[in-house]
Length: 304
Image (cartoon, rainbow, N blue to C red; front, side):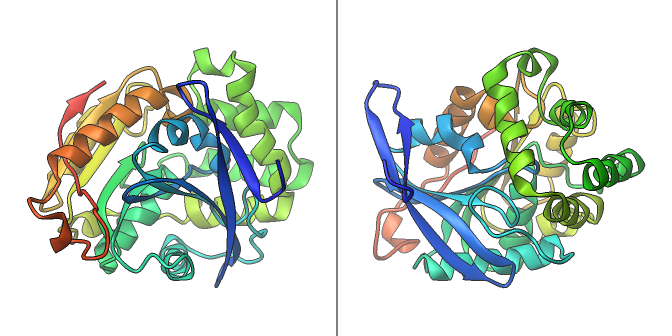
């Protein structure tokens, strides 16, 4: 394996390699992993992790989808974040990313938490999203800003010491998952690699400063699936149902046994929902949406 390849284990036991791409944007050079065959889907991860959080989801999607797995600004193989920014500017960088990758037609966008917030902004303000899936992405500003501000300051001053890593991990994973070393490692590895300054800037920009996305959903006309979990106190299933009533073509779903990092905790349930959503919103004539390739848009209310 070279530094330009990422290997994932497919369910059938075979190994697949993803190719690495870099695109320069207003928020620095962003790293993207790509592979597979079929309609394009962009995967953007949650805060405090990297593209590695999608590994199990990617393995299942590769046979039928072309995946583009993004490292958000400041994480994974992307450049450190060097200034305070916003979800809105992050969405502008996402447009630059899509342009740089040659993805001119609307894509399916799946965003976990942070990635969902970028996707909501993108879907409301551009024509680049064919279908949107937000996973554990509350539409209202965080109600825990004071505690998050203290945590971010502590990370900036002390770095990723054990007690702070545990606090961050608890935001992302259920108690059961926190006891599984491989799942903890997804969070801990990304936080350690991020760097204190970049991590503080990203957290402030995309968590503390995150605004109300209600109007973005109201302005969205493409199909939207809003996924909640059963173990996140600030984004409950009833909240997702209410949010799904805002866009023109909204639906909601619940995935059990997870908190924020659904791609890590319940990847198979998430993939099942994605496939159902994409199948149920496929246009009668795929070429009407994507003249140059077969793209199959999505929507459905379900539980996993």
